[in-house]
Amino acid sequence: MSNLQFDPQISRQIEAVYTTPDVIEQRRVVRYALALRPGDRVLDVGVGPGLLAAEMAEEVGTEGRVCGIDISESMLAIAGTRADVPGRRSIELELAPATRIPFGPGSFDVVVSTQVFEYVDDVAGALAEIRRVLRPAGRVILLDTDWESIVWRSRDDARMHKVLAVFEEHLTDPHLPRTLGDKLSAAGFTVTHRQVVPMLNAGYDPWTYSGGLVDIVANFVTGRSGITEEVAHAWADDLISLGPGYFFSLNRYLFVAAAL
Image (cartoon, rainbow, N blue to C red):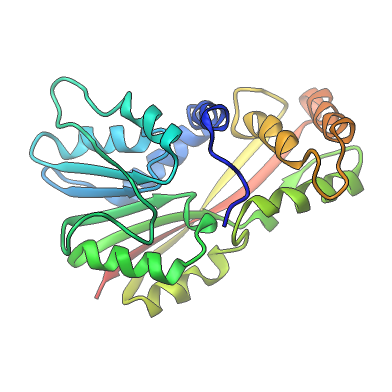
């Protein structure tokens, strides 16, 4: 289980990160893979701040249906601010985990989940639930990160290695994409597409994915495995001070699969 608590403060920080150009582009890639049509019924597992759900609601139109579940009440509260927009159907939101989806069999044409399954303890159980709520031949789109792919420039490589190793503790499986194809096959899906979705930030800018990630990482690692507040701040200050020499790269992996 994740050690990162999605309280109101963290939820707002994540919402801010999700509005950066990097994550806006990521959602464009995800929506392209979704290939939604008017009238489609879509479930977003781990709806977060609701940005993807709101974009999908525009695509499926008033005849479609978009539902979102999350285990964080604060995330659902933020998503709720995007649920009702004049001219389109409201987004339905429920407090629920990926392993207990509160909808009946065959309720959806498509299920999507981004940056969620690396936090899930029982991936097989969650995939079985997705298979249950999908119609026959329905599709699932999953996007998760392999955190060993991270490249983050620092003047102190040993400190960077320590900070990133401790930050991985906020995940259940920080390397999930390596085995996700096998897990999908075992759950009764056929993988039809795999794709790398890279993040790249060159030159420090707080309005980027990694720029927003700095504070989240520093706050999480403080007090863990001997990392003091002073060390965490020194790590963050070093990155920011690199200015135009700042460099960050990370790979996310998108899987599209069809239910057998």
